[in-house]
Image (cartoon, rainbow, N blue to C red; front, side, top):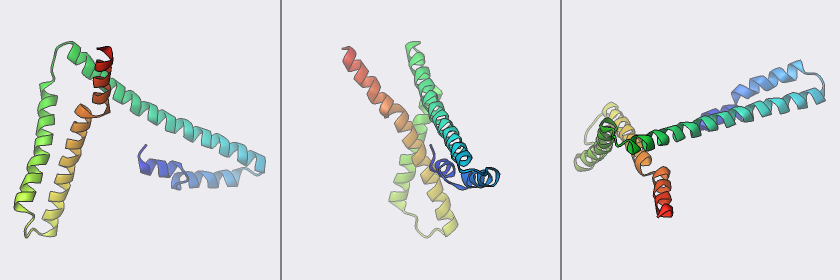
Length: 146
């Protein structure tokens, strides 16, 4: 779960307001404890639902890839975009190393830094998709079957 969501849910500003409402409405200590326990249970269920949605998303993407490979089709657009993303990252990095940033003003340096960061994130995602944990899992399953 992203850190900012976790900070909101785990005692962040979102829950702070809810806890203040609980303190104002509920008068007995037992009711407060029961309500806070129920509230924490709802938060835990929500966190688990988010984790399950993330896992299901990864599973469906992997399943789609497996089914398309079994059918013998290749997604040329996906492959071309993957090569383009990784190539762009290395191209930008090579340009920056060979030419440097020179006498650029702060705005231009900021833009180049953002573009470089986006290209690095794209390259990381492409690499993770093709060679990440699912690739290792796939290769180990192949060797087990042999």
